[in-house]
Image (cartoon, rainbow, N blue to C red; front, top):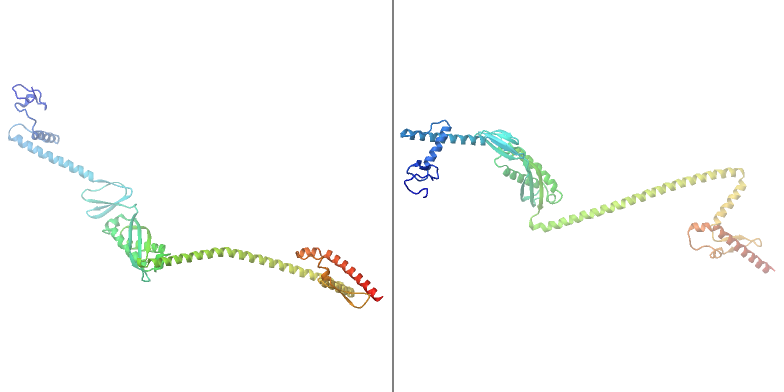
Length: 394
């Protein structure tokens, strides 16, 4: 027979374990009764009175016990929530600004911190992250030309209190200050400076002015770096500006080539000049030494001339004549047979014996050999002519 089959016998198969103690009621337990039992147990645990059997007094006691249990449970939840909300953690990259009743109270460093719930308001701010803001627009230069400038600003939070309290929207204040500083500096520069060499200097000036503006506003922001990403003229004149830029690049290239040529030529010229100076100094020293030597020789000759003037004069004359005639290609002789001067074509006689080319040093080395051969030819020519004159006279 099934456990819930009706019958007069006692049913020991009740799944709720009540057996036959439930009497004729064979259904599942009442949910309200189970809830009341749980509340009654909780009430007894909290020091209340349990449910009393019988009469209206029992119903009143049960209702009071259930209400007290609900209040106790709510109190436990409130205490747990308060404890949970009293502690918070500040990360290493953050700073916590604590407001008490809406007024600044303190700034907390990283770690586990305590606050008064519902009284203290905590705002966490990341102070180590470098943030980026961009700005772009057309503006007038000092020489009244339009230019488009793209700017990037890198910044971070330096003062968490000022960042939270002084300005409602620090990022928007940064954007306005960046645009103001950029337009001021571009308006103080010429178009050539903005487009070419002055871009780096423009970024430095914008950074300094922007940091001054943010300090005056009290935003609590610190500028890390300002980068001028691009500067472009208006689209209608970009081709002309590109031509100008190419011309400047060509000018710079020619200057570099000229500088390279100068670096090559100037050292060579300096070396040649130094060599000429050294040669001049050497020639100067040579002339001085030669003059000293000739002076010493002249003084010695003067002493000899003073002792024997006639002999010395004749010797000097012969040496001078010998020096002069040794450099001539023609020779004049005084014959003993007659008083006529004889002309000898020694230049033709010496053409076969003297070398036609060669250096001066080689000719100087063969001077004595040439003189000897010329002397022999002259003697033979003189003898032949003397014999011819003797035959004629006969």
